Image 1 (cartoon, rainbow, N blue to C red):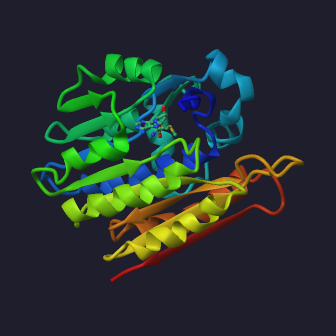
Image 2 (tube, rainbow, N blue to C red):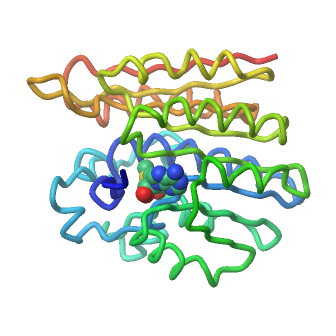
Length: 280
Ligand code: SAM
């Protein structure tokens, strides 16, 4: 089943949370000269036009990046995120939204390498066209859960694995746990970031607990619930990111960020946020 296209969702509240955390992790990796590798197991198309038919269909970016685009009081992590998005929109008009591959490429240095997996043929073609020719970058049309194993550990033993599936079927929840478990065996010191949707499904409610159980060396969990479900209880309430071996700076960087994002992106009065960590 490959019905999901990220073009319909680019820049929504879930992307804001995920990409804000992603940028913080990359900025931390950039504090040392040693090269690192980023593996994006579910890369999407790479970058998106917000005026495309797909992006305009539901206009999810309006309750996401566009809602905070002009903010003057954003906390530092959100300011860093907005600065990165602004670099793809140099005239200040928000037309383009960078996906995780574009943000990663933007922040990574000449010595770092990027590995991108995307199964959907159309999105893979777009990804390959934009990132295939890029320095130190490889694009695969292959299953990212299985493919990431072959990329670990990176030669420098530094890096980030982003696991950001579409969760079209409940099998993705189990596949995430298995992929991280396997990945940590090969690259125990690596940072792994899992994104997940907050939806009315037991698999979604249980995922963070399952991930905590396989995190031997510390974790960070951040989530936002800002959207109302429909009358039938369907829809994306919010999302979370679960980070294994987080940079020691991440909790502090997200501490003021989560309440700010929650207030800025809330679509109802019961919106909530969570930030927790376990350090060993
Ligand atoms: N990481 C992207 C970003 O932040 O810009 C968004 C990725 S989107 C949520 C998930 C993507 O995973 C979709 O483009 C989908 O086609 C792709 N996909 C689904 N199953 C996959 C698999 N087993 N391996 C690789 N890609 C897959």
